[in-house]
Image 1 (tube, rainbow, N blue to C red):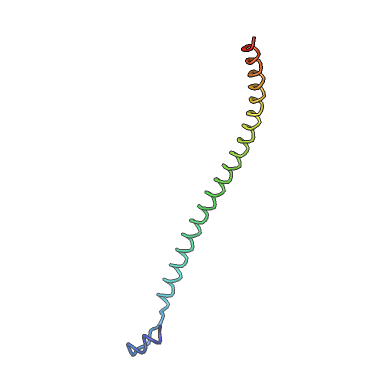
Image 2 (cartoon, helix red, strand yellow; image 1 turned 60 degrees about the vertical axis):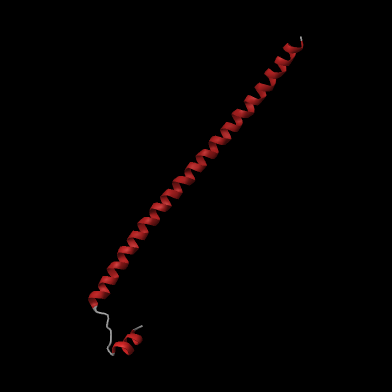
Length: 86
């Protein structure tokens, strides 16, 4: 790009210390913004995974309760069928 500038404008383009320092500061700023963004995304992902684990545990507990209630329901259905047949 500098070679093209030299050919077109017939002068050299130098990077001054000031623009170099501005570029470094811009890089630092972008780096810190992206780091904070990624930290937020990581925290959100960890919270989501924790909620999924909690939900999975609750589902397993509800399956146990459902199995117990199905047994009780079958017993009551059998008793109701006996009453109806009488």
